[in-house]
Image 1 (cartoon, rainbow, N blue to C red):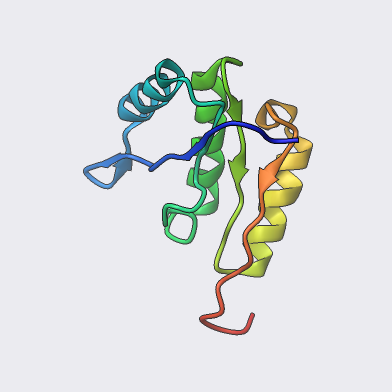
Image 2: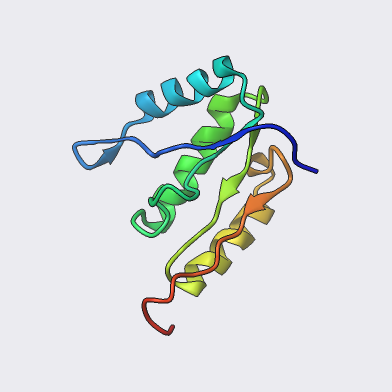
Length: 114
């Protein structure tokens, strides 16, 4: 199923906005470094802090910037179960997200009952 090294990449921001240039550069460095895949919006802490549209945008850009050279394992973690389920449905409905056919599923945080 999965072999090799997958990097949980950070989501770079500049002045409160996604830094797309830095994201592209980061992904290119991972490709050049020989990793087998990346996990955008995964376990580095961004998933509970980005909104739904930002989350989708980061994954879409990651797939585009990886350009089929490495796999992209879309992180779909969220604090709220509703966001988690919606992200999973979105991931399944958008073929361009599925460069590996898989996603990282994270248990929702237990900060409050939703």
